[in-house]
Image (cartoon, rainbow, N blue to C red; front, side, top):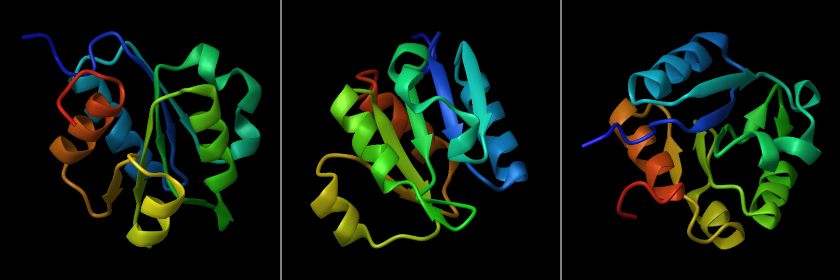
Length: 125
């Protein structure tokens, strides 16, 4: 069976560099073809994310700034994503983003990979 993230291009939105590096390595260990870390929304061109990435891991807060508007753009573009955050109101996320998984920190690597794989259609939901 191929790795869950085999060949996928993944964007990791995470402002804590050690966590971001761990998530990058985790994705690579599960077969991701390319992993890009962005610590701030200003680092990426929000208009081209859907063209450049197959899936996105979104921290709810980047440097004190909410990423919910960005997540809404991902949903509108049809780009698969999951939330990975320590700042979470699960009910609010479920109401605003039904069907989008929230993996709360501290999370296990397997939970995060399985959630992203499911969002990308690579694993059961």
